[in-house]
Length: 117
Image (cartoon, rainbow, N blue to C red; front, side, top):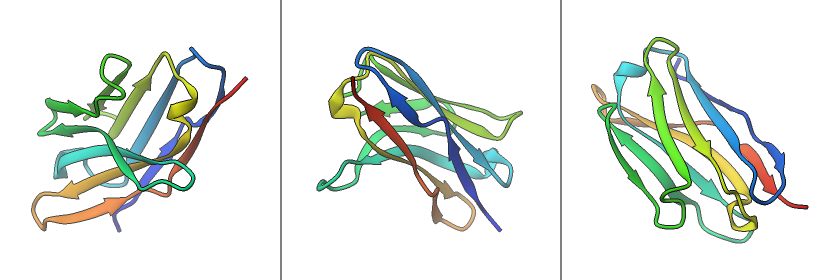
C-alpha cells in the first residue's frame, strides 16, 4: 500500500523557517512527479512547488526564492525548505506524488503550518 506521510509542520514567527518532510512507503524513484500543495482556510488548494524526475523544479510565484523542494532517494523522502515565512504561508501543506508506472496520484494527510506572532 502506498502511503505518503508528512511531518515538520508547526507554528513559527514571521521571518522564520521550517522544513517539511514527506516520507514514502515505497521507493521514491517510483514517483516521476512529486509536489507540495497547500490549502488555507476558505481557499482552494494550490500548488506550491513541484519536482519532476528528481531534478526539474517549479515554484509558485508567491514562494520563489523562499522555498526549496528536494528529495533524498536514500531516505525515500521529499522535503520543502521554507524560509522568510509570512502570514500568507499559513495553510495545511500536502504531499502529492504520481506513481509513474500506473499513473496514479497519491496524497498525504497534510501538516499544518501556522505563521503568527
